[in-house]
Length: 332
Image (cartoon, rainbow, N blue to C red; front, top):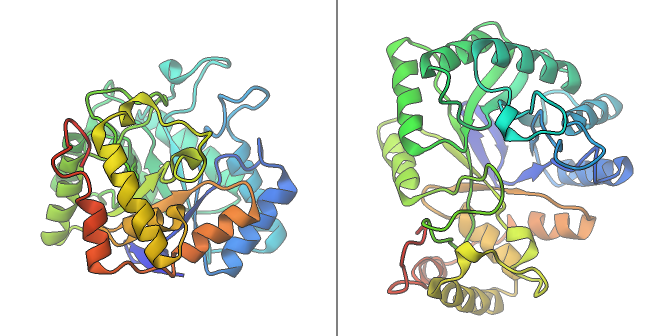
């Protein structure tokens, strides 16, 4: 298992997404997946306080609640790093992000406390602001997060689905007040790149842009490293399953060019296309921690085995440059 760092913590370079645990994935299967992940050296798990409110029959706290129960049953303490999120939980049952709790100081404090209770921990390993809340001054949100860190309720801070200029504003606000800065970022990202001028169909998804990747590289050069986590890395199975159609944002010439080279590299390495995608992300600059959501042990084992795959420089560059000359509004 490869490893990376979040602040001062060493964690696995593969993150297991627990979004469906406690809801669509039954407890026995979810426990087996977590057990296998930890047995293989996995130590980084992702959840949120709103998973999965949009699925009929569930309220949005099920993933955190399940993880808290699993931790107690297995006697898991700080060897597994669990990152959760707040800010996107609807405040009115049956609604969506239009009634999201937001990032006011009051909402941050209350939601963080509820997450600690559900996960059964004194301190959250990491806490993201799940989505932007431009109705609240950045100073208020960052101050609320700083209070949580100062009080020992949170270890690391993160921002998810924020525009790049908002990341810089958060950094500047934190630095000017000597507050802890967010060092964990989470965005949608994969090998195939969507057109940036075509909206993504998934509500709330924000794709990593060239500007964001440049920001992360530049900050690292200035001694302010970030850990970049990517969700939807395997595009819901579209790399290997012909029945999984890509959404309209991927309908451009670059997709065919990249897919062709992906197949070539997979054949050369003897790995699956999914494994090549995950290895390509981990080998990127900046390095990306792939977040994978799985429902079977076979899917999990495939992802775990990808951490042992190291692409040659030539293979990585061929993949990265496969769509040169075909880029018309794409994210690379």
